[in-house]
Length: 469
Image (cartoon, rainbow, N blue to C red):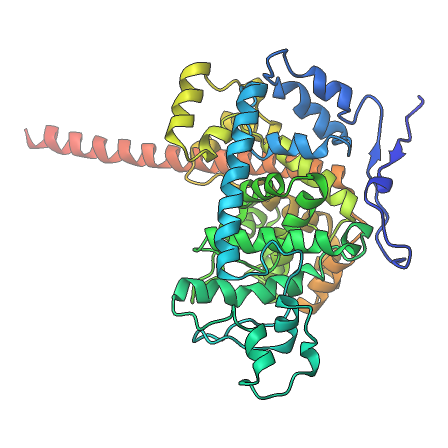
């Protein structure tokens, strides 16, 4: 049987010629499998209603064509309701762009480099709110002056002029935000540096601006290392900065818990604990071995969960993996769950008036609905089963070769560039089904035992009463 070998998508994400050690992309654009622009546009009615169910299975089979990836992701991430019209989506888009512009201006008033096309990689403020007067920072704020050769005297006129926008800050919230700006800058210059796209200063500064604005509006979480890896694809896929911001913001709705840190714990520890529980159920021998090695906390899987396998796949393949994950997890009520405006919620609810159709759900979501797992306080994300799938695949190697945590890390690092995104998702789905069956079976055993025990107690009480009479 003839098989379409597919066309490489690497031309859409050009690699710098000097970067020769980049993992080879496995994703291919295949006719009849990959969601094409024609199939995508045909899924809309004349008014703009989208039959999302038509597209989900195709995305899982062959991914999304790079030419439409940005607009498809806006639906997969819940930026728009598939039951909305073209006109309604235009109104939402314009409203969001205005909101982003407002937030960005707030940030610019606090730090003038926001929106300037430049960014910082050196601290701009101390923890007590004093400007650092770092020459690198001052040069970015006022590039016309040769600040690199300024005298060390902080009272010199030229230095004072350049720093006239850097006054002492007393607001603790502002201080906390400004303390993260250089860290964002340091991560920006390290993110996807193999791509030609990021040779342009304007694209680097756009990434910095979006992350700085997000850190300002989400004060509970702020900025965390790894967010650059999650945001970068949005900048590349969506031309408008505000649209890219909202895509990233929707993705963070799913992942922000991983970045929430306290003095006692890191947010991702909850998912690592869940991963441990899943592995204990589906591969108890491996779990016991990892515990014996001191890896029962599963911290070796930290990176995979934090940045959704961005480092384990090529850039192109990581996008393919993400869209498959989101298509499998898709919930048609996503937009309504995320939309903060009660007016929008009531309007959407009242005008459409439709209950959730299981056909409009992703395959993973359907499995959760059927098993009742969706009713749990926080359904397990497919990413946990993706990591579990990788561990299961490497189980024999880990059991026979890992004699310490360093060996575990080395074995898992060897998967970089060698994973197949489609096979990884298929493996995750199989483990998810196996996990649900075992959990349901355990629950039935638990209930059966307690019902049996309850009957014995009731019978004993009844016999006691009869005997007393």
